[in-house]
Length: 434
Ligand SMILES: Nc1nc2c(ncn2[C@@H]2O[C@H](COP(=O)(O)OP(=O)(O)OP(=O)(O)O)[C@@H](O)[C@H]2O)c(=O)[nH]1
Ligand SMILES: [Mg+2]
Figure 1 (tube, rainbow, N blue to C red):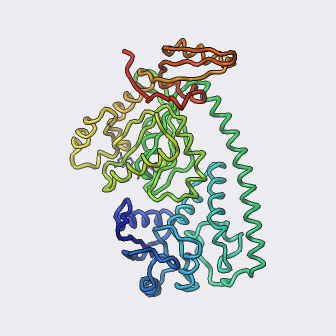
Figure 2 (spheres, rainbow, N blue to C red; figure 1 turned 30 degrees about the horizontal axis):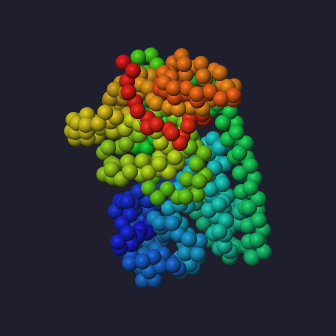
Figure 3 (tube, rainbow, N blue to C red; figure 1 turned 45 degrees about the vertical axis):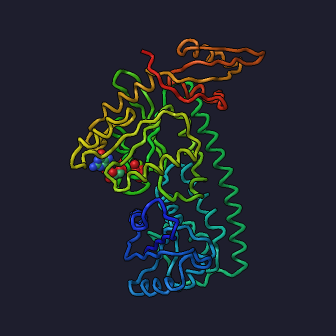
């Protein structure tokens, strides 16, 4: 049973019905069968139960009638709202929100150690304030997926207050432990990235709304075999593949976790490190499902999320995907022609990919970006590189460092990024050399 709301005067990004469609798709991905939905248009949010008391009654009746054992809210519920609603709906009914649902999907789809650690951390942080006597013991909770298990009828009375305290303490310990482990994993990955940066192969990040076709595109251009599925958040762990560009250049393409509207905060926090890697890309390909009825809003969410994780001054190409589905593909081509950074493609049918890769190559290899970097003298390698492959327009020395101002090919940007003078970061002006 799904519940969506709309507060008068405060419209969400999507109409409530469209947001519920998305929630239904999330539920399906998590393995939950949706038997009904309810919508309430509210003048204000009720502090105790989020929705109004009349609606609580109505949903309680519906849940009974349809024999549902779960009510999923599209909006984030506070721990006490969740508790009050569970009390109102009765013992056999679990109340969840969008956040819990996405957390569950993430838990099912995380395969790398870092991914799994990040999800577990987010899950515990979400649960800590929500521990109540109704909730089962930790072992059962840690199993995560309600999609598979569901609640059991016995033992619902659960542990007493004392047990609750023990559980809380254990969760806190576990959270501290997970944070330490994550730091280790990240330090390791950081070293790996350093190596990659020294190899000077440019990095292209595929970003976009979940289900836009990022993994399909990665597979199409690299021959990789990343899981493609008509599911939300099929990909959680970043995959990187080497791609040959038409004129002989190479680039590393990285597939990343998709974005979604109302992305739960604990998840943004947990995945911040992964997301922030987008910052180190030399180029971003924004994959957009141009056939989705909410394509415009989805693009907005992506742009906004990129801004939130601090992405700026990275060149971006927008790939209008799935044009094979349009009744008139010319429509997409016309749209793409309007803007130099748009390309119309079909990742699934290999349409427009050559065009896309040519654009990628042009930006990475044939255009220069204005930068100003402060390099310690110990980085003689980078100083030499700037002189050899870039154009130095201005320089200044001190005893310990050199400041260089000039233009660099985009594929070298990542190597210099740690030394960029951000305060003066000139807007990435991409002028062709030839
Ligand atoms: N018709 C059509 N379907 C496509 C195209 N590209 C991707 N799809 C389908 O769209 C769905 C999602 O594709 P994915 O590549 O898994 O999307 P994603 O962006 O990686 O999604 P997440 O990893 O879940 O965020 C799959 O069912 C694909 O088969 C396309 O060009 N045309
Ligand atoms: Mg994917």
